[in-house]
Image (cartoon, rainbow, N blue to C red; front, side):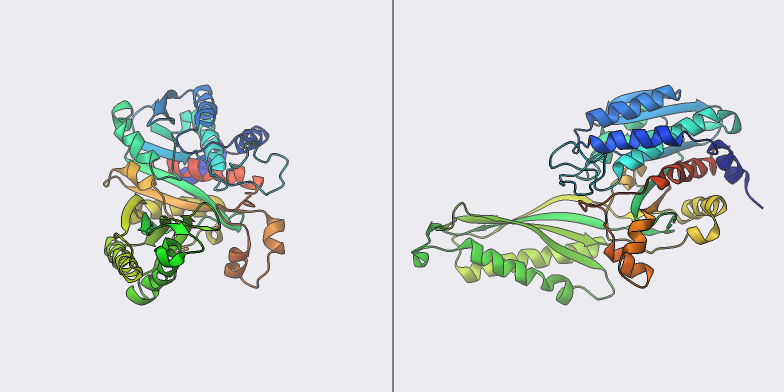
Length: 411
């Protein structure tokens, strides 16, 4: 038997203004904006929320947008979409490709904002069918990990009611039409680390008078690859990526410093701490072996927390998604090594559910090499790829997931 939440969700989303939502998405995609500079995107979302009848606050946490719709007694449900883009040069070839050089919605946040705008309209138009309070959050700076914390620090829950439950979703690769849920740990923590190697610069023709930090950095990069393979248990997932090396100004100049940027992915604080200790030890050792005039600078930078769904909350949302989309579309995909700051909106105590929406166009998926789902998954463009282009067929279903999730709690 179909639940009231599922029936109502299907009714409220039966006549979504899909062409208008697709145009809204294309406009957002053409005009990507970096973290904490999402002024145009925020303004477009605020327009949608105001038109749907939400009380709207702008500039929360910098460029954040919050809409409130009070509709009688009942729970307070928060729906969130992130808004920022990435410093990626788009290579999709789409007719609505980014018009901003070096900037692209390569992670699907434009689609997230579109889903939120669609859900706002559907739930506002159908307010006779439910009661409670709806909070819609357009969050800045997810990519840099500062947006959720900035909104909370700026008095988010002093401006709007404190939610009873938080819901969020993310576009991911995979054949369009699947809705993976994980009732527990779904996203890993991430930590950035900067290492500065101090050498002694000089002329390229006289290396004996220098201490070459580039050579030391090269040894460091190689040795750091042993941290996960030789210092972390195989049963404890972890990733160490060297994402950037910077040194020198000319081919015949040995520079005085070299800079290495690392990114760590872990699922526990204990593993993170072991990796940081190993990084410091290896950096000190390599610099000492090279005869560097001073020790390395190791700086721990930005970080994201783990994202851990409340099992009861996620089971409830997954159940209504099965009713709306079919049993085969919802499954436990297991934890991902990607990271999110969504959980910071929950203040460490509020229950939340966060799930995925697969978005690869059918033609791209069918053409991808591989015999099974995982082989194809590895072959299609992923988030942060210059070729990442979600299928527009996911616009309506992504609205429906939010609407049905909200109605699983609203009376």
